[in-house]
Length: 374
Image 1 (cartoon, rainbow, N blue to C red):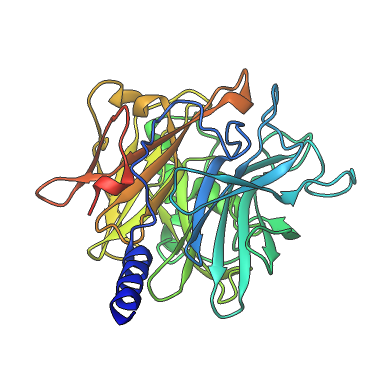
Image 2: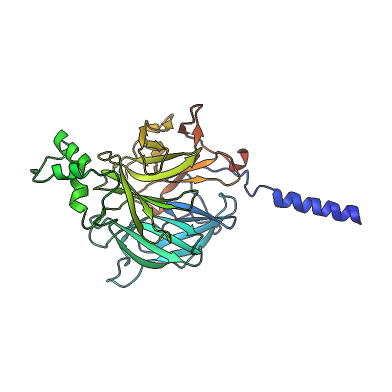
């Protein structure tokens, strides 16, 4: 009897220690069915790992429109391959006076968990209905439950009236009385670098479009977003409850024309992969690194290699996921947009590789599986 009990205990221990991942392949660019057999509808998304479960949040896209007529969807998984539909985490509203009324533009939702408050916090890029992309707001919602429902708290421009840590008051003063400049001339580029659009938006707050969130090892959270008409990235620290901004922020790569930021940290170095700004059309990825999240940041060449590397294999970055229990496995997530049929947009998930110098790079794989990684 004792031997039988020991055997059972041993088998249970082995079962508990077994990797939660699967050797089922991930195939980028193909239909990815959920537990209902429907293509996952969570575009421009990000993933939260909470209580040994992964939660994928993203934009619900329609058959003919990329505007928000449903809201932010949520899926859950234990192995990152098989996903269960959890429903709509944040619903748009029927009230035409609401900022998130049906038909607004709601993009790139990301959710993080605040250990101090026990709340799940969602940030996203919001454009008000009927105003194109002129609002350029950061919006926030909160929930007691990871799958929602999330309560919408509001939106606005970022850090109004607060000077960025790396903005020179001397540079801003040099822009006083500047005549109107023709775009993309050397004089205009120099003025933008010094803060032409930054100064314009200073009192009302900085524009916030494509975005991501990052929680550092010390629990500090950061909002990373395209600003200044998409010409400059901002990295802004969030408040301790993650529901607002602390006022500490920096400008990154002014005039670089970056959007779609995604970020991870490895061996004390922060790496950020972005895209250029070419609308729905894919372009070459960009990459930056820094030893401090507030910079300075150094730009690298396109991290993609091989065929179609000049268009990031047809996709645009949205998130980078460090995989728990898998040393040095970081998944680069991107969207293959299909603006004529938005609901059919596909996903690219590729493992980030590292050269002997530790610099990340990407190569296309028709299929790969997480369980193959140690």
